Amino acid sequence: GDSVTQMEGPVTLSEEAFLTINCTYTATGYPSLFWYVQYPGEGLQLLLKATKADDKGSNKGFEATYRKETTSFHLEKGSVQVSDSAVYFCALSDLGANSKLTFGKGITLSVRP
Amino acid sequence: KAGVTQTPRYLIKTRGQQVTLSCSPISGHRSVSWYQQTPGQGLQFLFEYFSETQRNKGNFPGRFSGRQFSNSRSEMNVSTLELGDSALYLCASSFGGSSTDTQYFGPGTRLTVL
Image (cartoon, rainbow over all chains, first blue to last red; front, side):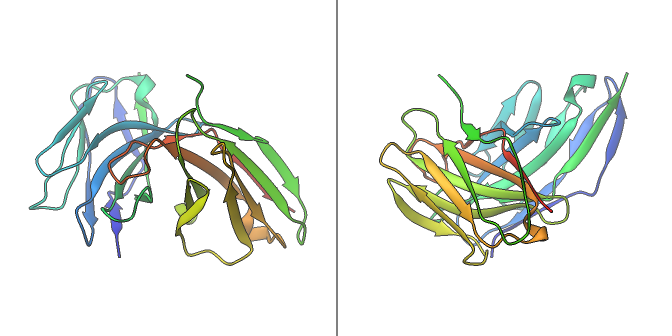
């Protein structure tokens, strides 16, 4: 079945540091890939997405490229801010599975001033 | 445009009781999905409804059920509550319900079972 694997956390960075959060996936079909972010006490917000191989999703300085050859969708940001502190989830939705999202376990990011 | 709303935001129940949670999707969205979030299991898919029909179901016992109304609003019901049902229940809506659509999440209902 479908699965998403995220790197273990938590991650603590200083402000303006470079961020990489690894995400790899297993899917039977042709998935769309997503990064969602969850702030304390809130639901999930879409950060970015990519729906086909080699697509790059980007938003608020975050980027991720859909790599079919390595089945990866790593999240990067060049300079993190304290306000980026949150939990980040990588997810996939497989073609034919309609809206069903399969999530990774999530990783907590803390950014120090 | 108003976002996805969920009611109630917090619930406390005792074992053996049943509970109904409600979700109002973004106007015009026809697909509603439900997820359970716990510290141990993470985010798990419960079910998805599209135009009042259940299209997809996750691996949960039959105590978990749902429905969708003609205005796309959805409810989920959990009967015979167990301690392990304590979780944040999230509802998400999307316009067409395809795998490429963005899903928009509500703030969740925090259910505590005592």
